[in-house]
Image (cartoon, rainbow, N blue to C red):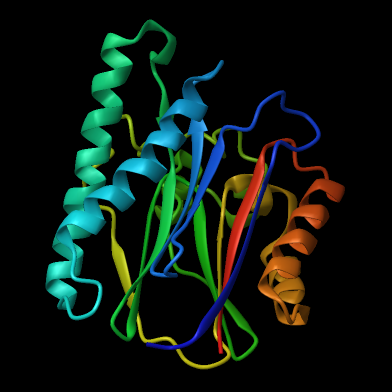
Length: 246
C-alpha cells in the first residue's frame, strides 16, 4: 500500500448558524468521506451524520480492504450507498423533524494498491497529479446537466439559478442509482481533495490547484483552502479532506 498523509477540516462558515457537513477519516487511512446535509433545522446535519456512520459500517462488515477485486469493490460500494440511501429515506418518512432531509456524499477508498472515488450530489473529489488538477466526480446538479447537454455555457453555469439544485443525493428515490466509481492507481506525489460545495463555490479550480500544489502538509492545505474559500465569500459550511501520497 502507498504511504499517505491526511488532513481534514470542517467549519460552519460566516453565514450559517449550524454546520450540516460531516467528515469521516478512517483511523487506518482506508476510507475518507465528506457529506453535505440539506433539509433545514437539524435535518441536514442528521442526514450527513447518518451517511458518515452507515457507509463505513457497511464497508467494514463486507469489504476485504486488502485484496478485494475492483469488481467486488464496485459492487460493495454500490450496495453501501443504496443501504444508506434507504435508511435516510426511511427516517425522513417517520420523523417529522427529518422530513425532506438529504445529503451529498463523496468518498475516497483504499483497497490494496488502488484508490476508488465516488460522489453522489455536488460534493467533489479532485486529483492533483504532476501539477494538473482533475475533478474525478461529476456534480449531480441541474446546472451540470444543462452544461453537459450543451444548453448553457460554462460561463452561464457559474451564476445559473439552479447551480445548487440537485437531482441526485442520498435521501431521494434516485439517490442510490448510477453513482460512477473512478478507479485510480496512486503515484508518489499525487494529492487528493474531497470537499463540500462550500469550498468550490468560493474558489475557482485554478485557485484550488495553486493552494494544493503549494502546501507541503495536508492539514495545513485544508486550513489554507478553507480560509481562502471564506475570504472569497463562500456562504456555506466548508469542509475538506486532503490525502497526500508519499
